[in-house]
Amino acid sequence: MLQDRSMSRRDVLAAGGAAAIAAVLPLRRSGQARASGAADGPFVLKPAKAPLVGMGFPETAVWTYNGDVPGPEIRRRQGEHLRVVVENGLDRETTVHWHGIRLPNAMDGVPHVTQKPIAMGERFVYEFDLPDAGTYWYHPHEGSSEQVGRGLYGPLIVEERAPIRVDRDVVWVLDDWRLQNDAQIVGDFGSLHDMSHNGRIGNTVTVNGRIPGAFWARRGERIRLRLINVANARSFALDFAGHRPVAIAYDGQPVTPHEPPGGRIVLGAAMRADLIIDMMGKPGERFAVTDRFYPNAGYPLRDIAYQDETLRDRPLDAPLALAANTMPEPDLAEAQRHHIVLGGGMMGGMTGAMMGGRQTDLRTMMHNGKAWAINGVAASGHMMESLLTLQKGRTHVFVMENQTAWHHPMHLHGHSFRVIRRNGRPTAHSEWRDTVLLDPRELVEIAFVADNPGDWMFHCHILEHQEGGMMGLVRVA
Ligand code: C2O
Ligand code: CU
Image (tube, rainbow, N blue to C red; front, side):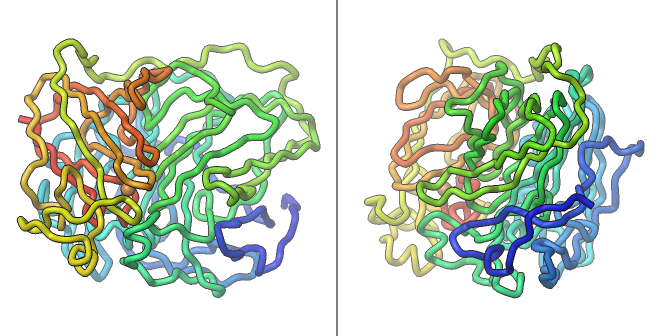
C-alpha cells in the first residue's frame, strides 16, 4: 500500500472547494483497453454507494451506471461501431448523450427531440459508428443537473488507428460534489441561487470517483493524460508544478502540440484535454497539482509522487502530433455568419426574455426557475422552435457575445467546430472543440461545416444554466 499524508475529516470536507490532498487509496485501473467484446452492456442505471471520500467516512449514496462512479469506461478503436443497451433502473426518466461524438441525430440522446425518454424499467439501444478518435464521455440529458450531479457519467475513449507512443494512457475524470459532513450529497438541486449565479459549485473534488491520493510515476515515463471535466459547473485550471504538459487534443480533437499559456490546463464543464507529460522528476520527489481557476480559491488536487525506479533519464524521443480527425475544413470565405447573444444571470443587466412564447420580466422568469437567454429567448425544456436553421454542407460562423457577468462553456451537439477568434483576435491554434469556454463579456467566434443533418442542442454546459434557459436548438437541413 502506498503511504500518504493522512488528513482529518474537517480538512476533507472543508468549505469552498478545498478538496484535498490525500490518503491511502488504491490506484484505480484506468487506461487499459477492454479485453474484447463488440458490445458493452447492458448499462443499468441504478442507485449505489461509492466511497467518494474514503478515510473512514460513510460511503456516498449515488446514482450509477452498473454500480460504479464513473460508469464503465468504454474503449474502442476509431472507425469501430458502438452498441450499448441502456436499462433504466432509476425512479425517473433518463436518456444518454454521447458528448462530442458526431453521430446520427437519432442516437444523440436528447429527450423529446431525438428520442422518447427511457422510462423507468425500460431499455433503449444506442448504436452508432465512431468516426473520430479522441476523449469523449457520456451522461444523461434529462434532468441533467441532478442526474449528472448524483454521479451519472462515464468516459468514452476512441483510440487512434495508429496511436502515438506513450508509456501509459491515463484517464482522470474530474468531478465536483456538494457533500454534507456525513459525505452524503446535499439535495438542493434546482436552487435559484446556483441557477442564477455560477451553477452548482461543490466542496469536494474527485478524480475517477475518489478523493485522489498521489499519482505515482517513474522518472522518464511518458504519460498521456486524458482529462475529462464532468462537473455540473466547476471549471478547472490545472497547474502541474515542476512539469511541462503539452496539449495534444482538446475535446478529443487533435491540436498542434503546444504548452498552454502559463502551463495551465483550463477545462470548463464538459471539456476535455489530452496531455503528454514527460515525468522528469527524481525518485522520491513530490509535486502538487493545483487547481487555480477561481481567484483566491486555489487548492491542491493531488500530488505527483516519484517511485524509486527510473525508466529513462531523458524524455522519450517520439512524435506527439495526432493524425487529423474527419471533420470537413470550414471555408471562411464562404461562411454564413450568425450573431448569438448570451444574456441573463445576476449582474448581467438583462431585464427579461421570451419565455413560453411571451415576453417575460426577469422576476417572473426567476419564479419559473429561469434566468438566462440565448438571443432573447429562455428555453423551457428541450422542445422549442429553432434558434437557427443552418444550410447543410455550408460553413457557418457563430459570433457569440457573452453579455453576462459569468463564464459559460457553450456546447454544440453533433459537430466539432474551430475556435477561430476571441475578442476579434485570431486564436493561436484555431483548435477544434465541441465546447468552448467564454469568459464574462467575451466575444468568441467559432466556425464549422454543418454536415450532420438534424435538430441539435446548443447550450451552456453549466447544467444549472442550461436548465435555467441557456439552451437553443440548431437545425441543420
Ligand atoms: Cu454534454 Cu448537451 O451535453
Ligand atoms: Cu452558463
